[in-house]
Length: 347
Image (cartoon, rainbow, N blue to C red; front, side, top):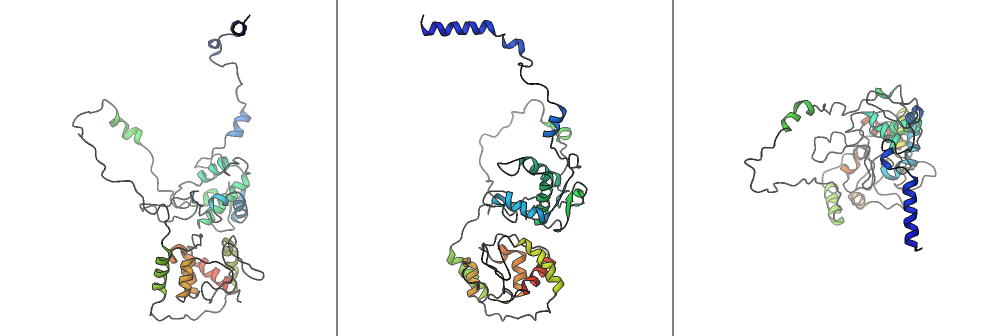
């Protein structure tokens, strides 16, 4: 008997042995109904009204360490985003622009969305491994990075709705089903149609992808601004405020990922900051500064309190082309506190 006939015989035997698929079309004879506890284990939904929030808590101080270990590789040490990975902080007051920066702090109306998404989807490639307390801590750190809470605020299922999201009232209820759907029903018009179609504009959003400018242009621009003949008025420094410096030490936690200060401090991603107040810009030995900063240094930039406050408020706005990735300290009291802290570490 040929191999083909043997194989055909097996097919015939199989057809006689197993019932037709149509006889089991409803269940296919596979699986069983999920148990209530099994469904509960996968039911992680957290609603805007708080339904589904688990019991737990965490603060920004704990969240900073967790974020650095599990999130910063994509989202940056300060939640500022790396490459094409999303920015989670910043973007305040940008929603009315052509290219708004939509972050947790500027755009998201409900904090529950942040908790829900992080719990079920993060970290990337290792989703579902975070504990409830870790998620609370990470969300707290993101809120802190957006200046929405203080670093000692404990985020929990009890305090969740004490946080006010800036864009909470920025959305409207979708009522199109009752107000517009009827207008779209029925037969299409198909009359008085255009004979041709032309492109009248393009959906181009400028400045989405940063473009590196010619280094000479950047240096020339910075030099023109700083090497002017306008006399520099040196302000009289106020007496040292130890209590304010203590507050500044807390604010400096936002800087520790890149900078060191004090005894034994070394250059890291950013230069050491010991003795920076009152010193010329770009003066730390062994650190490779950006070309714009070196141009500013050649122009005579001194880190006075006024200059430092302006830089801390908006690093990229103050010095175009700076390597500093930190979005800035928006609160004036935080700027003053960290400057006082820096003053306490002279040469």
